[in-house]
Length: 598
Image 1 (cartoon, rainbow, N blue to C red):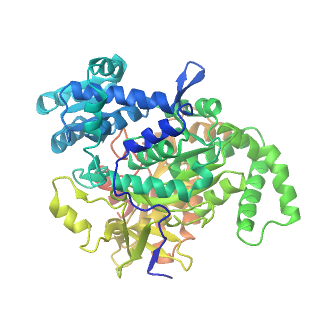
Image 2: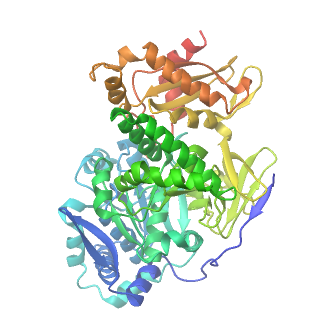
Image 3: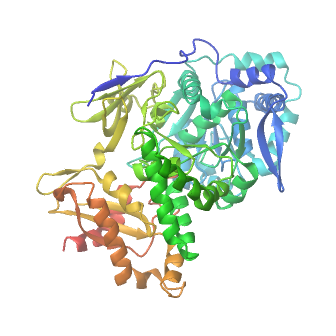
């Protein structure tokens, strides 16, 4: 094992300019190229590089005309939509700082972010976003301007800025340099009040330049395209948005994930980005559809062949017999899964949580290579990533070009590079705790580096469980394997200061009706009647047994309890990026945990 690994930068950190340079360059080099597609009924309408620049400039002029000053902070609270991207660049073009807010944020979170950042304006949607803001409007007096997308605010801003000259706008744009703050992204707040991460134009430009070059097969293809459905408020979605603009990748937006499959079918992206839970859902739903259609055995064999085929790619290549079986199942199974994802997809980028080797090999085996990466808000998204020419399935890849990873004496993953944020907004104490004087950033994660430089994340320092016997247990390994079972919605390993490890398990509300039908039971059977059902208990026990194979006996789950409700973002147990709020779950389920150890 290595203790430190560095990959040389493919593109140096910028010494001048800002993120708006990218859209200016695009409009100059290829003005007619379609860089966005907007849904209009059943069709996608193209927006060229020139048209996008004009729209951004028009909205930016409107901001100037409305009295927004250079350096002002402006909030954006919305689902993933084209207008989000327009105002992101318009805010920068006007020399300002964007402050993204999850559209699912509570009134208290919205108030804190707007007041802590000192925002003077807010873009939002007419739906629940505006209602949430209205709750805290009286407590955010500095927010003197609110623009609602459904009220055609972009058109109004363009009209309002008609008298702002190009020279005046350009004088605002060039106030920003690489060291200027581009955005303040507030952490999810899994522990305590959210902190504002300041990311500079240099941070983000260095990140996207090297990610685009490092993942050239993904971003530089002649017809590269992606449908963005993750929140742009999250640094992962934001970075890919910027990368697509940088590389002139055609991008669409999907505001409602419930409509994702038909949108994928009509848009036909060549790559997508997502979190592991979505890939788990795709696998599990495909498996259950096969079982429901009496083809469960075929799917299981196809799954085994896909994994075996992918593993063989790393070990001298597949045999002739394996190639023949793979070709057969490509017609029977794999092609149908790819078709459900749009039919042209070749790549996927995964982050936010560990993917696991099983899913990684399965998807590569069916023809969709998932490039798993790792990073934090503080690292401008990715700090490590699997690249097309350097893949280590089951790892989060090597440091991306221009970054370094070090494993501290206590196992903590340390990160360094020009993508590391300069600090937390108005919080010098937290900044000093996070960044060492020599530039190394404390990630808070535990991990290791193999002899090839590939990084594995094994847990969070703050999430390590110490049993009564003094055994340190990283819950992530067990939880990732448990969630792989199609019936499991979420799970959380417990056992701090206890004699053994236990687990709280929720059932997947989408999988339960399918399972009930398979058992000949009514689809309306309430969850309360299922948590103690012998068959359900047996299914979950099987998942626990498989998870326990990954750890020692002292780390294994000895008891579990199935809960009657799933954990969701709406319920307050999950963050918008689908991370578990462990402190919330621990508090809500004190009695359930006590019964495990009673």
